[in-house]
Image 1: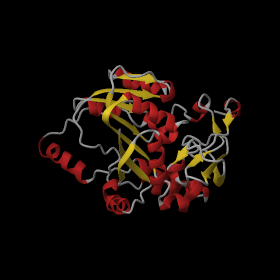
Image 2: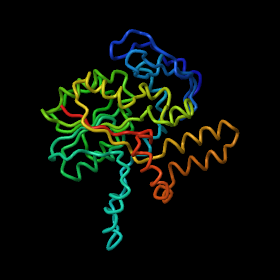
Image 3: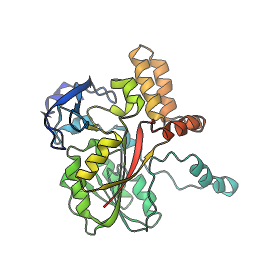
Image 4: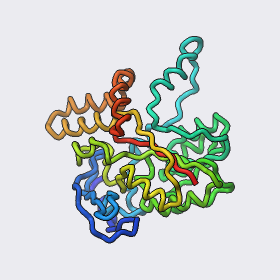
Amino acid sequence: MGAKGLDSVRMEDIACPNSCPKEDEVILSDFDRIHNLPGQFDVVKCRTCGLMRTNPRPTSDTISFYYPEDYGPYIGTQVRPVDTKIGFIKFLTPLIRRIFNNKSQELPSIVIGRMMEIGCASGTFLHKMASQGWLVEGIEFNEKAAQNARQLGYKVHVGPLESAPTPSHPVDLIVGWMVLEHLHNPIDCLKKLYKWSNTGAWLALSVPNAAAFEFRIFKGYWYALQLPNHLYHFTPRTLEKVLEAGGWKLVKIHHQRSITNLIASMSYVLDSKGLPRLSKWLHDLTFQGGKWFYLLFPVAWLLSIFGQTGRMTVWARK
């Protein structure tokens, strides 16, 4: 996409969604490092509540410019073939997964019922939960990704959460993996999800953690910044406030056992220093690391204890 595409992007200046006075501090200014699409964007911090947001930002009807077909979540969430391992290896797989669980999609103990996934991409998690007996449906912004999920037989609404219709039945569990930070109106969306859910329903969300040391060190090079796709940059404190404004009570925070952000951020820095080959090596280590994941897991586990991995999964309840 070039300058012609950028001309179609409209920008908007928005206030803090917590209805605070418009007294913001500019934290940094940076660009799209995922796809190197044009544009410069500020991250501002509300001086009243501390919530950080991208502002000005692309409008909801033009931000699709920054979600090309090769956007990572669209191509990285295809359902894998059924596990065909046999014997001792198949017996060990669940144990290995339990030991090295990175807590990225940690769920509370809940009776199987109806589940909705916000930002279901190509349907990997829908498929996983359906195989456990859940009645599942999803919402996905990207039409191609949603079509992949539909081909698996799942009901998926194509479009933003803001315009999604009310589900046919109230749901017992709502999940959104790295999606809340993408929403233009997170509090309104949380209120909508509240209305769609049964009494006592659970909400499980994962978001980047801007309170981690990674953000302070790397600033614009922080991998989880992802401007302008990420419209909000939460900390545990500001996320709790946004959840409460949407009607949800925060129950627990799981700091994910992952150092993806850390290594990918170092890759950005190396690239900016004119070391593209070393940068690519680190990038490949991050996203195609294989066995490296197990070697680096002790570091991720230790950082998670102190809430410093830059990613968190939260549970909230109606």
